[in-house]
Image 1 (cartoon, rainbow, N blue to C red):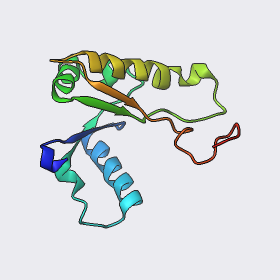
Image 2 (image 1 turned 30 degrees about the vertical axis):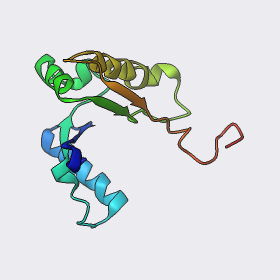
Image 3 (image 1 turned 45 degrees about the vertical axis):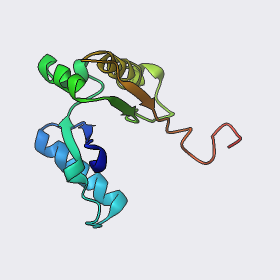
Length: 130
């Protein structure tokens, strides 16, 4: 990322910007421990947002700013719960994905959209096969 002058913007659900950063730091530590060789803070920016809300929980101005900054979206923020009905997941998963696609269509040029499925990322599928 650094050699190409790129940064990752993380959209993190939280009540405040500070809590969004704290949540990201906790997740990073959970996966990578105290490894200081991974200087993720210099390569990333944390934005407070929520896929279940219109404009991802951002103001119109911040939503447009985000659209102007990015060149791709990697979406792996779906709420995963096999026991909830579709209606309970619709706002965050279905409409949230639609909001990210809308984000990709805004700005100077269209963006690439990558969807990461939790089920397809596992080694064993719940319906058989691999």
